[in-house]
Image 1 (tube, one colour):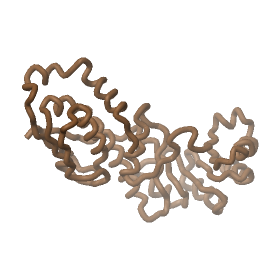
Image 2 (cartoon, helix red, strand yellow):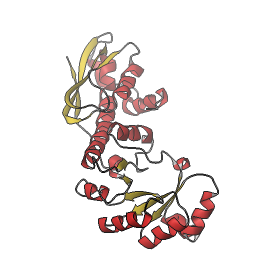
Image 3 (cartoon, rainbow, N blue to C red):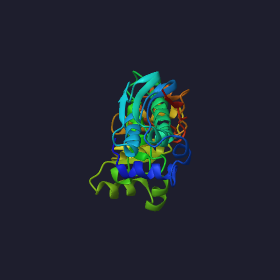
Length: 269
């Protein structure tokens, strides 16, 4: 997981403002404390090193020992820490917010991955992420067993409906895109568009909001000529049926934009 001290410092500055007035008022300056971080419901843990970085930024001598690892599924204690009491309390909320957010994404992703086990399809995320947090949210998807789609627009070519309106047609768009040397994916809403994308020799086709019956027909029509990605309207109730149509990938924006944060707490011992 890529992270810099600048990110953590900015997040701390947002939360602390000019300082933690409560802790500075009631906790002696030199007091030390031990604490445990607890996951209060079962889920996939993610963000432990990020939490460590939060406390280290406030107290470079903090001891932060994990009792689990990112990607582990459990309920209970995930870390123990010891350090300056004011520092532990100042970092508490940011660390818990990050753990809760990322673990929620990892847990939801794991649910989808387990739902399609054995089908051969893979779960992908999207760019529907929280601005500024994309790298760590996509890391959380990987902790849950999913795979990352594009990190940014420079990671690959995905020709969508608005591109097509400006380019004129799928064949024209793919022809000019292929000249870049990059692999080309095209979003298609109908089987006719799938046929046009295949004729243009697209490398991958995103099948947008298609029924399972139409997805199965698209798989048969493609016959291995391009990778197929199903997207739109994916839920835990229908993801297995979608995977069983034979598509290669299933992309789900909800992994990052709708995951519920898990409940973490920090208890001073």
